[in-house]
Amino acid sequence: MPTPPHSRLLPWTEALFPAWEALNRDPLVAHWLGGAMDAERSRSTFERVAAHIADKGWGVWAVLDEAGEAVGAAGLHVLDGEFGVEGVEALWRLRSDAVGRGLVSGVMPAIIADGFARLPVEEIVAFTARSNVRSQAVMQRLGFLRDERRDFDHPGLSRDHPLRPHVMYCLPRVQEGPDR
Image 1 (cartoon, helix red, strand yellow):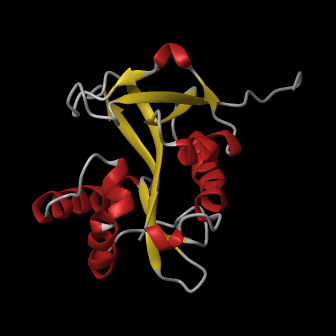
Image 2 (cartoon, helix red, strand yellow):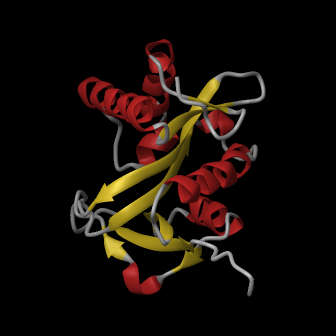
């Protein structure tokens, strides 16, 4: 079983599937994703996320709260150009009752450091709906920088959908060497 980069993270296993389902049914999560996942999509994304961690040793992990309950997901995901964006994305989502407790800010630095150690990328990106100022504040706390030139309209949402405009943030790899 892969070792997570932080003590508040676990690989997704079948025992955690109910937590994954609850996360994807949460009204706050559904709002920012443009709608709730149906049971079939929830199962298929769960299986894909769990398999990726099992195969690669990194990916999107289960986030544990102070009591050890899985209340969210956070990690890195390879973008395939589906949104007009390629590279590695930092992502997270938390159940409504877990928001605002510093869980994402607590685990993401370790996830990002692990990603830069494992992956030959020069940056990690994060994006969200323009109106999702809470996620943007987390991105900024984590050191991501806004790149307005790369903002985009989410192709999976209708032209008049209020979440269609997305903002892009980037976190460049810190260059190490004698000059730094």
